Image (cartoon, rainbow, N blue to C red; front, top):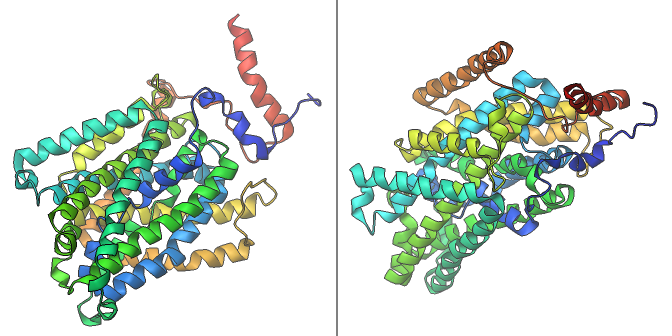
Length: 480
């Protein structure tokens, strides 16, 4: 026992043999997966101009990344490399606060992610209906949502590597028309239009929800950490490049659209970039923007579904969900998780764009508060644990870093409508009921639950690691 070589925490990535034979995700696809989990391009930012006007919209996409996106990305880089396994933030919270709160985090984030994914068929059809009015409502719209969901779900089933490189191709195609639009608009730009503001007519609830929705979900990539090639190096770099790509991808089209044509705030709603493209470049540029929107929504859908489904797989490996959630298809993908996530999307796709954004933001806010607390708790509880990447701040500095985003979360929650608050709170309470029910099912052995023997525990001593490593061997011997 004394000669047992304890796996040190910095080599946790070597203790995940589940997907060793599968091709890992490299940095370029990972950057675009993060890009699509967070942004996917400027489609959907139009409502920020309607809510607050050009100046506040531009300032929002300059300031908000500093007080929200960068802190969230830094936390994801530290904890994602500290726990290089599928499950991400669920594992962080479980390690800091225990399995009950880990399950609640998983429930809130998965539900928020599924609600988020229900947006993309809506956005896709909102852009498409200007060219094909038949998909605006009724049976054609419902059929389009179903068909799109089935096709994109199948792509997720085929493998994360395919999804990653698909995200690269879709990302390049989605960004190009806005580069062209900016070049075409050079002669028409009037920088004075960027300064237009009317503080008396600002819809602060819509404005903050738009900023929050368009610049969050940086932590979603953590649920894929077990599929990343050399996550200790790849994950922090990918997050850094993705932050730059996302911010530029918002500001460049926003400056073009608000500076090149007179601003009519009421017109700035879903799909308005198509109108701007027609005004500046003609029909050909309109169709390019609409095609880019369609492909961008495809990219966001497959990226979000990957994150949601691998989260369920990671929770099953931790014994929080029945074992069948951890089963993989012949392509290495979490089949059951994909099917559950797709079903949730279909159930929620009938909601309006604004209702979906508000509901998911409310749930996401609660999840982020728990995540922030877990981050600080892990710093205090395990100060000597190896962190391949560490936010260059001490514990006090880390707490101060989280003050602005925490305040922002409280503001978003306070501005939520009563309807959204009540529906979201009911959804939260469902998690408090669901976790004890699953524990009861496990106790009665109605479904099989198991914890992977390869998953580490931060507080484990050398002898405890040795016992954990011997358990599978002893079980195998007992069956002989």
